[in-house]
Length: 257
Image (cartoon, rainbow, N blue to C red; front, side):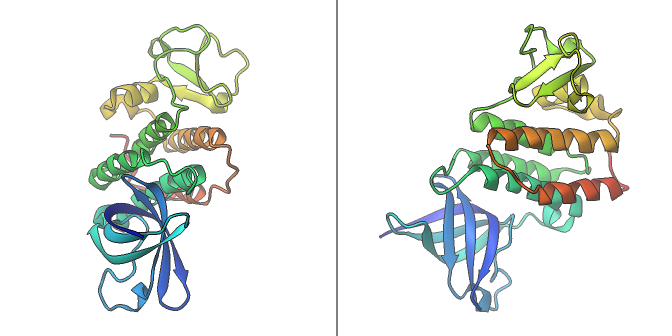
């Protein structure tokens, strides 16, 4: 049995018996790991029960050929207070984690996603508006890490630069965008404004999204999520995404900056 000290994001928590917990952890070197912390819910410490979204440090007692490993001496490195406090941010985090959990498993642990989540959580914590643009960037980086990334520059049919058109269309099953000229008869629900593609390509949004309405942002978010879930070959209920859709519709502080 090997003992390792690791940093990990808590993707999911499951209470186990009266005082223990099972945790789905995303780690730097091992990817997804299932850990059990015995008696953690019995302790008086404020960090006694680790929540989804926390970045923690823990000892991990790794047993070969086992899917559930014992955790010990766990403590919180960063609980991302702004994300934890603000409902729109926490909903975006949960939608991202829902996508990760649909794609990874102990047999396909994907440690490369640790860096994607680190970047996403850091930016989300510091975001000052409730626009889901960071979730769009997450979906793009997530898909690239797993080998089905989106090219936001060129039409997959004619190779023209997509930014030369006002809109493009995402063909989920084809794995890319087509320009407006090649999109005859395409479903308008798959339309993406060029300002969104420019923001994803340049990673700078600013005034690019000033004309994107709340309704459009909700549609675009679900479209990118559907792309990732399709290529993960998973059928989900989209509970976290549905909740995000509700809070975006109700949020009065939505800003496209």
